[in-house]
Image (cartoon, rainbow, N blue to C red):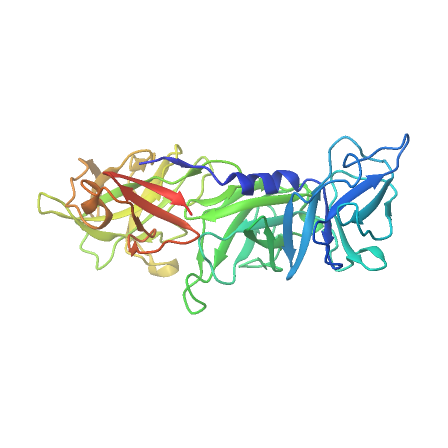
Length: 389
């Protein structure tokens, strides 16, 4: 199984270029739009010779599509006289930027009378977080917490998206953080209403970020928030529990002394589900994405607050570094590590051995006949991997 998944080059390029760009709404409808710039001391052509550069891509903000022209680094402070033209044909009146900043985005509209500022697009005073919502959350929100700070960007679930931005075919939800949190290190929690507005709110593991007044781009998958352009861990490992507690239901919670995310979610954690081993035993199990951090495991009966009482088992030494599967026998008094069971094959695993044609499943193991955009399990020629389509 593949362990890492790299994001598409176009998504990476889109983010890298966003450090400073000039965006133009082609309201005049030019068929071959170019952007030329002259000015400075001495006279300098920012986008090379006439008629200038073609757009590096597009960005859609609140339903308005802008052409994106990347600003080369190293020319801060120069005067830029911009000419939007139809490949040396028709052109609009010049627009002047008195002192160029390569770390700033400029939004303009090309009208019959010239380039004008797109006043509705105002730069944020603080950080802006963009999230590719691959987990498919409805009504996504971003919450933040930090030691010594009380709801720094608002009470749970935090701030809701201000809309979507599409860059080179990738749609991002936009979250604007207040300037007051710039310079703070926040733990971000991305959450949503699950597959429908009626479903219970679900969330990803925390992501710690030192906030600067700039744009951040993330991909939201089951593995959590991952910065665009970095590998995403896509392989899971299982915790198996031979349940001897007698509880009606059994949950597992895990915490990391190193400050890692709650891999099974907040208390009481994740409800364990049945799996059948080849030896006839029924085990309870849950999966998490691989990590090299050590976690303390706490089994419990799913009670919260005052209801919890003594109904949890916390045994010193019941720890797990989720790089490989592990199994424990759990009683009301102890948790003892045992051999990892060999399971009966089912679902995806059952067809891995001999299938020669690619078959796709969603992350819940349901076969998908015609997979479209998203993250899927691909099974082919005895191998399985996770792929982005």
